[in-house]
Image (tube, rainbow, N blue to C red; front, side):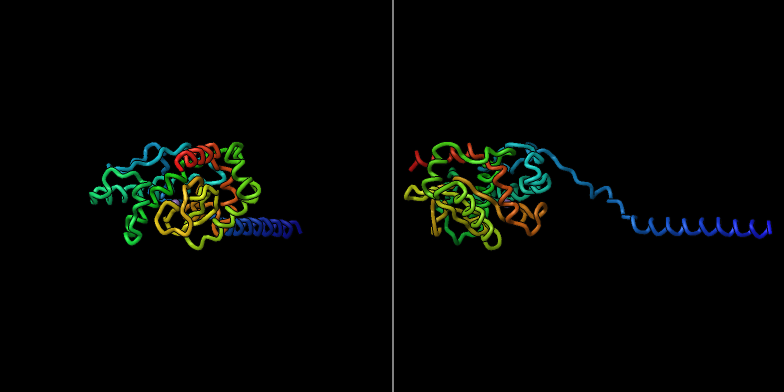
Length: 260
Ligand code: MN3
């Protein structure tokens, strides 16, 4: 009797041990993931360390660190956008300018205004340089929310209210098919308008449906938001309103009025 009880106890303990080792094995199989190789580790530098090639144009200084617009624009998106995409447009433009004597000493605005739209290399890279410089200059980690000065008055006058303007801007940016930009501009009649442009085109270029002086822009190429928002472009555009530098936009408006 005693012997049988001992046997039973041994059998029970052995079963438990076997069961728990099986469980452990199963668990190990499920959680085991390959560790990243050393070369896959991400290195994120500083915006000030990024330098364009020698030439007519340099990068605008990013007015904040890569992580400072989080969570509205993530650190990886900002780093890629500034140090890879923007840098490439700038270096390409410098090369094109160095090869074409007609472009020597022109401002970027003059290059765009005199552009031959059939010159796709210059159109894409001069556009890309201008649009990105303008975009990064207009960002601020903590936005004022909305303008408070003469621009605010003009927005109320031309759109009816800030909310109407905001909805129009979000709509234009969301509906721009494929890659492109949405803009707030001052048109030739002195009226504010919301427009969008495809690819790297912008409202300074010839033969645009609406030409005008840019005041605010948003990049809706997928590289500008896809890591953070995937297909939810509208969420990105809505959150963009949390990082607009309205003081900068107002300064641009005053300058545009003075230059008209
Ligand atoms: Mn871009």
